[in-house]
Structure formats: C-alpha cells, structure tokens
Image (cartoon, rainbow, N blue to C red; front, side, top):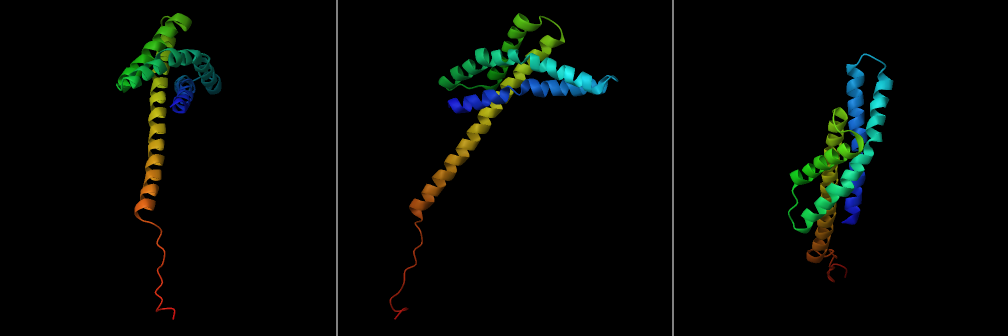
Length: 157
C-alpha cells in the first residue's frame, strides 16, 4: 500500500510540468512574440509553483484518501475536491491571493489529485492482473497436472 501511494504521489508531481507545458504552448501560439521565451517562462513559472502541489498532496489529498480508505468510503470526487481546496488555500497563503495564478495553482493541484487517483487505480489494476494470473497458474497446476505419457507395456514388447 505504501509503495502504491509513493508511486501515485510521484506521478501527481508531474502536474506542474504538464500544466506549464500546455499553458506555455497555448500562450506561445496565441501571442505573436518569441515562441521559446514565452513557452519557457510559463513552464518555469508553473514549476516554481510546484511547492503548492506538494503541500496540497501532503496536507489534504493523501490524508483525505487514507481516511476515506480506512472507512471504505473512497469517493473520487471527494479526493478531487480536496485537491482543489488545498490548492486554493495554499495558493492564497503562499503565492497569490487573486488573479490567474491563483486559479492556475488551484487547477494544477486538482489535476495532481486526479493523477494521484489515476496512479492508484493503474497500480491496483496491474496488481490485480498479476494476482489473477498467479491464481490461474496455481489453479491450472492443481486441477490439470502435467500430462505424463502412460506407456503400455504391450507397445514396447
């Protein structure tokens, strides 16, 4: 379980890179200025605000998910809401109180919560497939033993 959570949190930290790349590409194409400077400026701005995503994951998303998991009430929309709420709170406290940076940080944290859920679901599917394959092999071995040829003595005489 801890390994799955660690992989999912690591996957969620790709959110600033993805959001920064998409915003950089959009504004670089929309503005008729220097393509590379606009792209890299927005990408670096998103990456520099990655601490908000990390804090949101540490303070809101992972504890909220573990609490929901403990009571067997995991709700995807609840985890996504925790991501957006945590992003808004930490963005207000640490980065920007208004404007598009506030909105982008909140969306980036919500997207990170979605990537977290995707990572958990993807790992769970892979583990379930491995377990079912192992169970099938064991079942086949138990119910269908190796076919050993039975020789008739009359054939070899």
